[in-house]
Image (cartoon, rainbow, N blue to C red; front, top):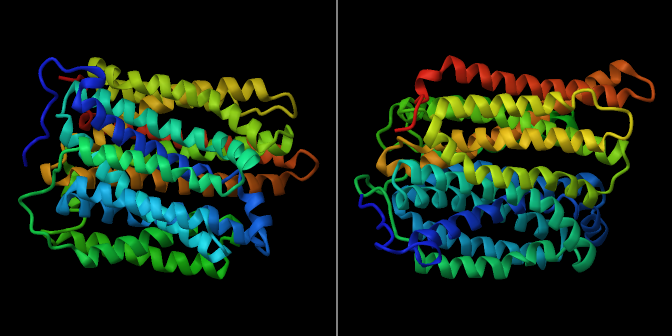
Length: 474
């Protein structure tokens, strides 16, 4: 496959084609992450406006996007590799625009949930195609590491901005604006994508799609993520959760078996043995387990214990978001100078230290502690996250770049589902065992220790597999 052309000699900054390629890819990833979290604050307004009968109905508006996103990521990555990353990227942007229109103009709860689900499907094609385009445009080495640092910053900025922007838009423009604001933004990115991006795909593979792998992967991922994210809501022994587990476990096992013997596999098992791709995905799951669980618990603490509203809570997390953005831009340079292993381990240690600052949540007046702890945590987390993104995509076969990007995204989504599910159950268990007026606080403290355990697991995994992470960048 021919590499995308480098910027012309003498071009730099705004005049560089590569600059605009990076802007389009990172800008769209910002939007994908923003739409993941922007809906949370708008949920009460949506329930009242759309006449949802219960909070459980609105929960489907919240979960439809991540369920569809996680379920279709592997398919999105492989389709982009086979049929053209730019083509898939542009058409998926069009799909995202139409889905946003459907959600913003929804006339019933069903149409709103459908719009959110279609947004998730479109995002599942945008994310891996965009990361594949970035890899094709920027060759392996220091420049790609810096580009992936900016990419990681865009994801963090999008997720945090969603929590703040959702509150502002809902309060001043109504909940429909949360979806409709995507339309002009996507139009601009669509025009830029057609103009600035270069087509790339796996030119050595047939365009035969592994249908069996697609069905098994999508079924297994959707069922697994549903069970993990909704287990506490429905009850871990309830019929929907048990049924999801019964579907997910065999589907995932069959997927591994089927993929092991296919040349045109959706995800060849051999990809996990290339460079640091396998270890990077494993560490990524553990890191997001820790980070996602921590954010969920702190949100409960700020809102229910300290009495903060949704918007002030979002602004509180925005402080750590700014830290993550600034750090992420520089993280690629750290990898270039010190190598994957050292930078990854450093980031995990700092991330863990940030959670340790907060494990003894006070009964009141804990805002300063949260601001300090989340800022330290964000500094380490974004360094580790960027490093796993670099490790998880470098070394991928030429025709599997979008697939490698999809795997990193899947790891992060699984980590979020597992982390929130586990810490929620831990908090509920210890709160029930404690009893009394401070039972919830006791549960949250134990849940934060659980986040520490996930981060410690990531550190141990990194040390044990350190030979798979180059000690010094070349």
